[in-house]
Image 1 (cartoon, rainbow, N blue to C red):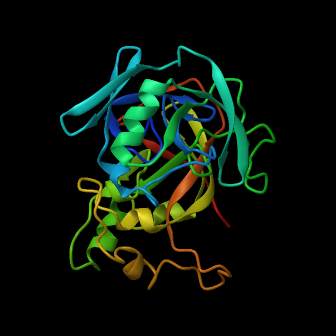
Image 2: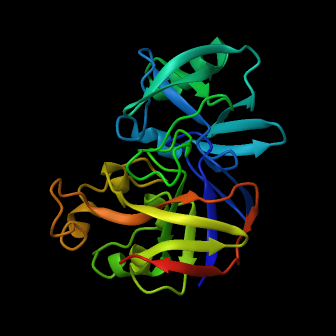
Image 3: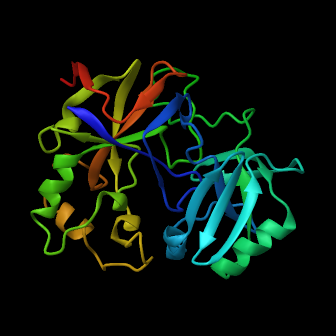
Length: 272
């Protein structure tokens, strides 16, 4: 088994960037989900409310990010020039974030047809993961929904596609790591793994939402698929909230190492 895809999503809910190598940081892969759009009330925005966000392409250009809406684009520095800060809400977390200037915020507001602001997560902000699943009390996460890394087996998607009338690509599930040569849903059985020089704890299955129904190229929903099909076999029998599970959330034991496409997966420990 090996890593065949490494993906980051610099701005939460925007398109991803496929990489050959990346650096493992405590709160996620380098530059992954360090930016986010928030409403006038400083609440996070995603494809759930604004599916068009899926179609906004992001490129890293030296020390800048450039976002494309078809031929329309805007470029801005990775660090905001004016350190205006606000407290933003993402799920149950409220954290401090740096706000970009009016020109940049107007561009995003015009594109999405809603008043919003672009914010970034400064190094000083420490957003804690859910304490129930934390490996260490100091475990933190970026603006990702809940955990620093998401891993999915290539064969797990193949298993799903064999049940669907219309096959869907992996980008519906927005993973950081895609693994080859594992059995379908074998990742569900892992408790601790090693990729390159980094040890990861497999802490929680990923509960899926309506974003999986949105075509990431067009921003148009496919109705209820793949959730309808996943619900027939990916809701645990003992699940109280009937969550549909697909993929595994990870927390890194050690940060600072490089991870590469082609790195082997070493299984260190299985779940009971």
